[in-house]
Image (cartoon, rainbow, N blue to C red; front, top):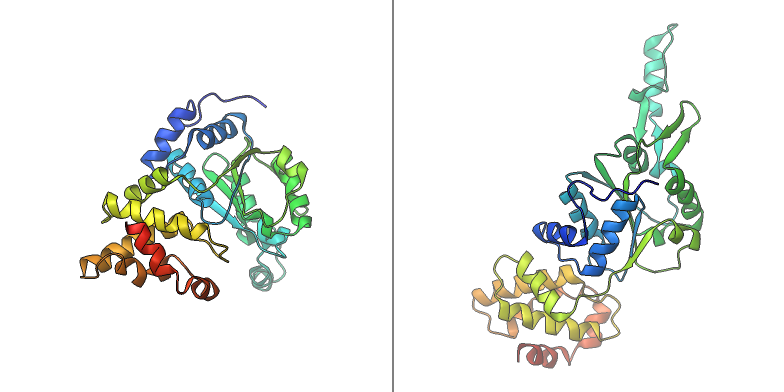
Length: 293
């Protein structure tokens, strides 16, 4: 596999981190290095981490800075090759046969082919970033099927032959680690684990993405979120919830709600599980008061 030192003008981890920042995504040196190496080596990038740490957003930002379309394959239990590769448009084929009468009609032409994300990525490898999101939600059978795709970047359509990408497409896989991925899949990828950002970086993210939040509020909401993540919650708030909570609380504060009441009244932006609400009931006010300081 030839190594490309520069991909779309990205010639190193520092340049990639800078470009991602311009796309409003703060990547640490380790993530920028892993992503750059995946691009340079033409290998898939596997991002693991808890829900809400920015794995999917990282893929979107990467597509943005490369000037490519993001093609997303959302995995789920029971996903099969038809949902990932292609399907034939049977109703349209039947209609074409009836309209053709005794004439010949090629029912396996492009007009009848429904390209799904993986086939789209092969057909337009230079223009797309393929995001295979939450691969850990798919069955192990689908994961095994994926191995062949990631090895050869080709698929076989019995009625038409083999479709092979002229060059390896940019592929990003994400996993929430709900189960272990097969070792063979890991070997095909450049791997990086994304944890929650430290307090300073998360406050920087809030300031970058929120439109009305001041730094003091960003620091306060990060302290509150950090405290919540230390609790055994069913759904801990992610980075996106941190940004949205800061925006929501700021809005209520501007409308007259004092601190920390503005955080308390907008808690539903950060916590989205009734059991978590009940678990923290009686303590949440003290936690928010401590976060506000």
